[in-house]
Length: 606
Image 1 (tube, helix red, strand yellow):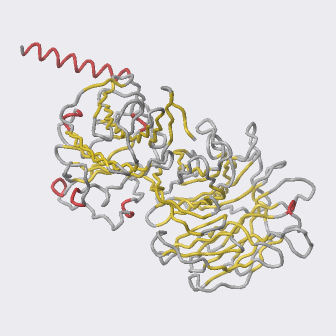
Image 2 (cartoon, helix red, strand yellow):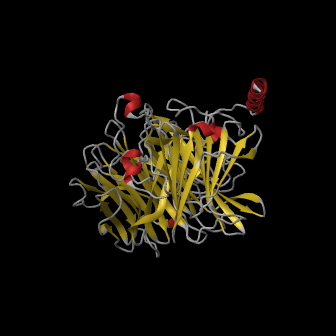
Image 3 (cartoon, one colour):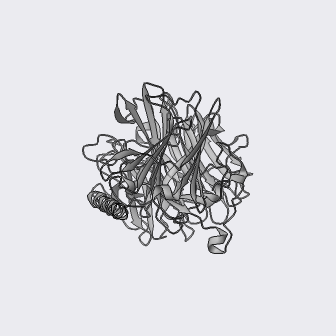
């Protein structure tokens, strides 16, 4: 009997070795992914367009938009509520003021720039131009209009879309798209004016980017975290075989700072297509916006209606510290199939929260996104009863660490905890009339790679736990090629179904997934999917760039050591939980893709 047991153990070990050898080891996914809490977007302006937002030095948020002139609004609670709009640059002389941008300088001065655009009939005394207004009292009062630049007086030779950057030296830069040098063709360049006195006076414009025969437009500059390179996101319609605008970056070393007569031409190595078309065919379209995260990574947005008829959507990507290799595509707003999101922008606030500012159906709304490069599990022993109380001790104070739903409209929050014997997961899914019946039910898929194996196929240490709203659990295990159903009898599942939502809670013994104890120093990785079914089809929302068949693309799960393990108390959560979403180099938040399953076939849903 002992010999038979030994032989079985040897056979199992050989089988596991074969499975791991058969599944190729690949490079693990790196970089942050953004999770958008878009269940209830907050309206900032009831009407308007081209909105921009910044966080002020006093902690308030300041937003601006075009709406019968240039309006501003403040928030003292990180965007939950907003003041009534104030008009600071009214229209006059049949010349609407449009497309504002704003910046707060190091000395506290706030500058709002905008673009006068004369209406027909055109007259030579009313020109397309760039103007600014300044506030030196935190936005309470504003200066008279300050002249920066005038283009021609007709639309075909106008100028457009101002955007600001301040350098460490104090120099303020104002970038804009400019057609006025090209009165005999439809070309457009990116021009730059500078101020060395806090926006009171401005230099003549200088060309910084131009592709002959095409239209560089809508510039948004940043200084990278290395403090050595200026990068400007633009829209560029000159890329071969694209036939549309494409998010693009042009750049210069800060040591050069656009000096001399040189500029980024169409063939320059300093002009880079931001998103590889092979990575994402939808990465066409204009209105790019670029920002830098506290950890140095970059975030880029643009608008596109590709893959969804005529519905304009806002797409967001995460790039590296050089503002290249953008990936982890996500959409901040769930728009169904009828709403448009036009002339959007991004802001980075607080401890690294990304705010998407969208023009939704004529209103200006915001949604917050949380960049993460790993999930967190706090040390606690929740009561696994399908309910939630603050005593359960999940990582987020409201058990809302991981928001999802912006792709499919099935909004959910998931969180983790652990103790010496179990891994715990809780998910609340806002779904009325949730169904557990086959085919195409609702539910949650939790994938676990218990050793963090970086493979391109599920292996013996990879597990898939599928939980239906009624608590039914189905488990699969990797075999080196695909998933095979198995039985893990020690896992506890509970569920509570309400009128508008259902909650699932799991307690997974470490021993059931091949571990003798909690892997506090281990490399456990996880993946999540939310399923929305109606009996005829099923929508699946997952972590951006995460494949259920490729553990190397899953998210690391960091088990926060307890005081018993370290002698140090775990950090307490900030009220509201937003301080938990910091970019420490360990933490990351993902974004999502929508997958539609119909007649057994999965297709990307846009």
